Image 1 (cartoon, one colour):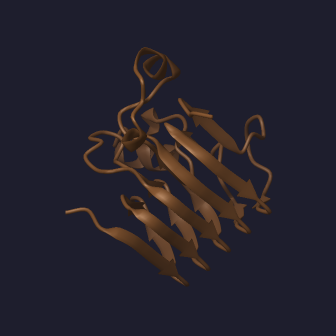
Image 2 (cartoon, helix red, strand yellow):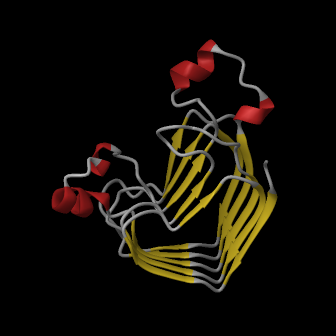
Length: 168
């Protein structure tokens, strides 16, 4: 059964060998929390990458959080040979729709509303010690607002958002 609603406030997640939060629901609020030293993403909104066995996330607010050294998969993969380093766009925040993984796939079908993740607000957060090029990845998503965040200098081209197969 699907449920609606997640309220996550003033939580410390540190030194975790996987994701911090995997939210597969609507009406999500994550605030005043710290995500530190996480091997995978701090927050995944939507179905898992490999199986896509759930609903999408909608109506999400992430605010006043600290993301410190999250999505450090390359370091973990070298230690465990887990294969996680095969995902080049692993980011602290990962927004996912269902089943659409490329612009090519979107052009071949008419996406249904239940396939597209929508309505995300990411504001007043701080991203530090991030080993990856991008900080937020959005796949098959729409209506994303990113405002008044602090992004510490990092490797790569300096782009914050990696967008893959998103709608206008």
